Amino acid sequence: MDLLFENTNTKKLPFEFPNKKGYSYKWDTNRQVFIIQIPNGELIYAEHFFDKKVSDRSVDYFLESETHDWKKTNWRDIEPSTVKWKNVNWRHDQIKMFGKIVPLPRFSAWYGNEDKPYTYSGLTLQPNKWNKGLLFIKEQIDKVAGVEFNSVLMNWYRDGKDYISWHTDAEPELGINPVIGSVNFGATRRFQLRRFDDNKEKIEVPLKHGTFLLMRGETQHFWQHAVPKESKIKEARLNLTFRIINHDKKK
Ligand SMILES: O=C(O)CCC(=O)C(=O)O
Image (cartoon, rainbow, N blue to C red; front, side, top):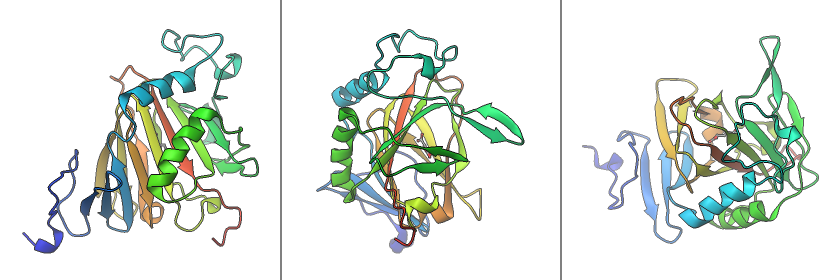
């Protein structure tokens, strides 16, 4: 084995990782995270960044409503705009695909600093004002990421039938090399990355209850990501992708 590419860590990544040129990782003891290098990209991964208590509380907080018990409601029959939410203004957006208007296969909500609207998939979202739960999480991940996130896109996958297709987070307002901090609660889902120039080059990262994953460097230029359908999964999952919106596109 070529010593250059051998992982010399004693602490092992808790998922399968290629042992070949361009791929390496190390455990950062101070921050208690893995720093992962992939060809033309960098990731940070912490499997249990938020403990079970904080993670359980987060799911309850973000899905709490005055009118519905989120655990007992069949969310496939209910539009979130008809619900009186306590903490998050969930919506079920529609997009145009192949000339047809279709609902997104997940619910979402956009939060952030007031002057930071965000455009994706042809939708321009005005931010809701930060709530206490999001600010608590943002404070922890700002520290480990060494940046100040100013916005977050929340995704609620009602069960394994909800998904997100292959895409990049490379909108101009995210800057040249976007830093995306992903926080995960609820059901474990498969987060996949594949190279643009060779779709067979793939990595799969399990995102669990309390996992933190960060993408930075050139990742958004060379890699697409997706969370595929897993119809057998019955439990809900929440994903919070923190971003830095900068309308001065040169930065
Ligand atoms: O749910 C996830 O882990 C991915 C979300 C995502 O890719 C996005 O919001 O752009």
